[in-house]
Image (cartoon, rainbow over all chains, first blue to last red; front, side, top):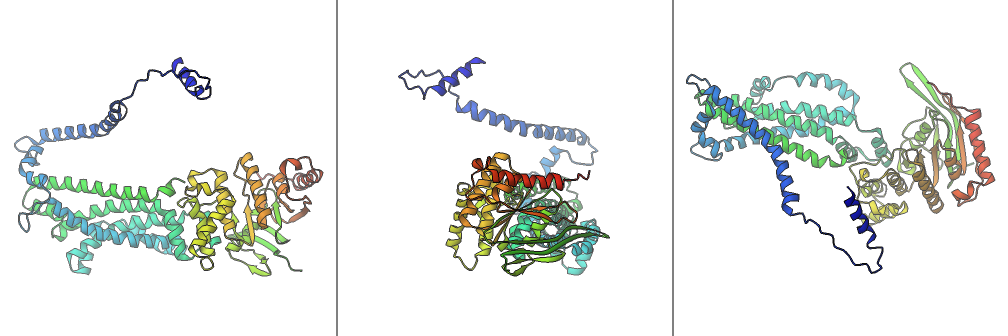
Length: 300
Length: 264
């Protein structure tokens, strides 16, 4: 316990007393790069990566045991691997007009989500701003939105098919209508929570409406808006699968429906894993963007 | 008689549902150009409401505010406010916070380069140039308030309104900032109206102190001239007879004649 104190006091007083005392170099243990940097990082990574891997192995093991019997209704992991190896290993193969890798199908679905979700983002933020800003717009629209947002994506599908008479815009509409509500509601809450101080500053500086929107409202409400956007992306990914199952075409949702009709259960399981992974990645991307954009506001 | 800033028979009644509270009653005050005036009173006496009326953030129920003989009833950069809690926008840097006002006020009269120079000049006035690229969350409370002052000064207001500007600061920082504001007032000759509840601060900084009676229906109880020569030095004033007498007058007003009646 005494040693470090002694060392520091010597080190501190050495530059002051330049009376010719020779510098005694203490034997320092040179910490190697390996022990100070790499080992802790590895430990840290292992602590984060190992538990999910172990759990995954356990789940797969139990699954294998349950589905190994001859009369099992669902395929065991080994059977899936044997039957759907091509789907797992190569997401981007093209073997024919309807026989393409899951990567391509996911990309088609993502394109639909991008359009529907993009529209939901723009319109949701605009409507949310109006509702947050105007008491009368809120009183008029909020009850309607609260009812509409509880309607399942699938319930919108017949209506949109009737309206658009085509599967592509219908699927996009279903995505839009599913993901727009949380964006509207969260934006409205964010706008309503803009501190009066900021409004006063804007009033004294005499910002006009457009400047107020871009310079005060959007940055101030950004954390709320991104909460809405993050819920929205999750919902739209939920909706796309359902919508594609019914409208047909190329997407990942239709693939599941098609596989079910031709009893390819293994393919369905692989597709489920794909959907889960993509949904996770989408959520992370929005969270990452939110993190960058709201850095200033979150730090206050 | 033309006054620079004139508060003319201001009444303010807050109405909520059926009940209404009269906050301010018949406030009359004239302020000369370049004058430093403080408004002091117990909390809840409506002094902040009065400042908001002058700033245009609240409208008076009766009466009005005249600035250079023109009625003002909406907020504007000619009556820039330094808010108690600094109110800097947390997503903008110190520089951008000041620039927000400058870009708006001098959009036509100054070029881009001149505006940039003007922002830096004002940051330099409050000695905050070193932190111009920092965000408000990265600087101390006193520094934030300095930036708030720079933002207000940079709009070249006709009247600078200070709403308890030092209220949230510790005593040492507060003294330091008071000296800065005094020096700025000396240098730029702004007309300043300050809300405070600190007797020493009021006497040290002001040319005149407006003492408000307790609300509801607060009025101006007394206006005290502070005949102390400028520049004023904090340490020398501590034993100055005039200073002590002024201080005594304000204390008597606040603690004897208009003692704060605690509601709860």
